[in-house]
Length: 231
Ligand SMILES: C[S@@+](CC[C@H](N)C(=O)[O-])C[C@H]1O[C@@H](n2cnc3c(N)ncnc32)[C@H](O)[C@@H]1O
Image (cartoon, rainbow, N blue to C red):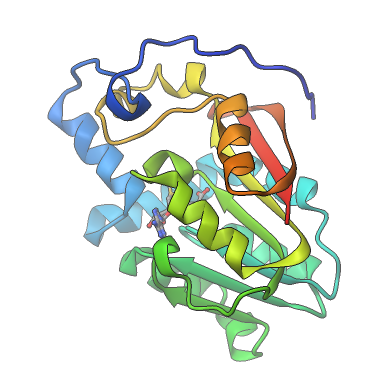
């Protein structure tokens, strides 16, 4: 996957960095469903996410360097596709996930039912703002396409830092500001858009070490950023 520098601040941004372009109501509904899939439309959203974001999830997991015995956490697992893949990587470890969409928890639990039954995976309904785990629990943490939807990213990043073991590693994927800004659903004020440099700055504020990012071209969603950091 190609890695390279990203340009800074290409887009005019409104409050909280969200674009101020007026978008139709349907775009806002779509953005809200991406943020927290709900009901029947949310179920369809799960189907869509599992196709559109597959490459981004695989790339992110590849950069995370998961070892067979690792304790792994994903926050915002959506339909649970990456949980499945992480389970094969942490084959003698344990994989946990937290998501605040009841619809996604149901879908992901169904997809990962055998691993859950075997005690290899645990998927919980909950929020990034208060993760149901003790400090210093996880070797690896990943978060894909979630940071755009956090009104306040710093408390969430602090929570990830808290549950990560010293020496643990995090991978945080997002779509690059200049690419996601072209989508109508991103012009609704629901999302906050970031450059790789901006995400790295947030990680540094939370005292993550060795924060850096890579970029890669994702076929269906444009330029992806994977920000990596350690505790
Ligand atoms: C756009 S979807 C991405 C799903 C999946 N990671 C993917 O790449 O396809 C965002 C997911 O994160 C979850 N989410 C968003 N904010 C969250 C929060 N603060 N705490 C827990 N889950 C959250 C949503 O419910 C949704 O399932």
